[in-house]
Length: 131
Image (tube, rainbow, N blue to C red):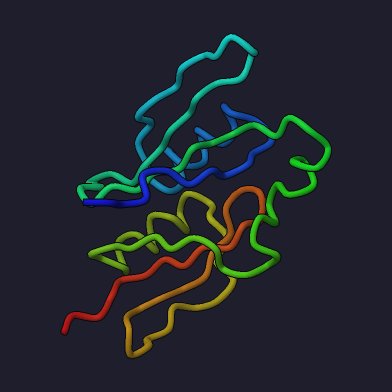
């Protein structure tokens, strides 16, 4: 079996990013390990993430990396957060201050709305349609 285990998300600050992903998005912190070079290995993932796939929050260490914070995909939606209850998670995220760029919409593939993380990366909150 093969799967994507981690995707790196370049951030400005570890603690700020941890607060956003665990607080506003309801992820859980699964690892926060100091490294000898002063960086940290920080992993967050959605609660109930039985299928795997987590984010490695990596603090930008160079000017080139800092330039990519918040624009890792050139303005496209680059991340997709699936939910089994769109209304619940949409309401909780809005109450936590998450910025949604559109009203929820119903598509053949499910209910979806685009939101931004604290740096401006675009995400889909998506409840897939049931077959």
